[in-house]
Length: 295
Image: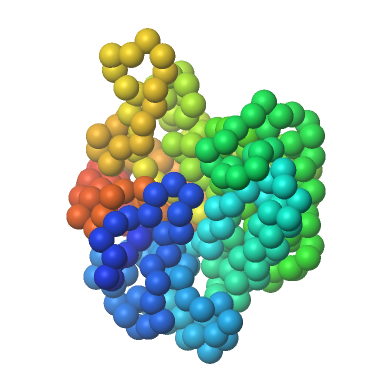
C-alpha cells in the first residue's frame, strides 16, 4: 500500500531544494505528528532532530508509530566519491551515521546519491567516469561497506536513482541488487530521475512497469514529482514542475506502488513552499482517486 506524504512547515517558508534535507527541525514529536495528520500524510521525512538525544529519538519513533505514519528516509546528499581524500572520508563517515540514525528512529532507509568523481557537489558536477565499470564496482563496495559496518536491523541503505552516474536505470539497479547481495540494500524509486530523454518522457509508464516487475520487492521509498519537456526547443530540456503541470501519470504510478507486497512511503519534494505542496497534494489525490486508490 502507498503511504503518501511530503515536507511539513513550522516556522519555515521555503521548501528544500535538490540536495537539501526535507526533514523539518523540531524537538517536539507530538507537534510533528499533529502537523502530518493535519495534512493527511501517512508517511514522513525523518525530522532534523538531535541525533545524540536518545530519549528524543525514541519518543519521535514512538509518536509516529502510534499514529501509523511511516518515517521514510534519512537523506544525506553529499559526494561519497569526492576526489579529495579528507572530504571523501568525511562524507562516508557521515553516511554511516545517517544509516545508524535511520535504524534507530525506525526509518525505512538512509539514502544518498552515488556521487561523482570530482571535488565538491556530486549533485551538480559530472564526468564520464561516473558511468564506467569502475563506478559500478565502487557503488557495490560502498553499499556493502555501509551495510556491513552498521548492520542495520530494519533500515536499508539506498542510492537515489540519478541520471548523472551509474545508478541511472532500472537495468543498472537490478545489476546492483545482485552484485551488492545484501538484504538491507534497498531501492529508492524516483521516477522523474529515470526520465532523461524524450522516449522515456513519453513512455514513462513502461519504466513504472519495468521497475515494479524487476525490483518491486526491494522498493523501500519513493519520491513524487512531475516533469515537463520544454517546448519549443531543439535541444532536450526537461524541467521539474509542480504536480499537474507535467506529464507524469500519477494514477499509473500509485497503482503500481499500491500493488506491492510492502507499504511504500511516497513523498513529494522540490516545491517552493507549503501552498505549492498543498496544491500538489490535492492534484495527486484527485488523480489517484480516479484510479480507484485513496491516499
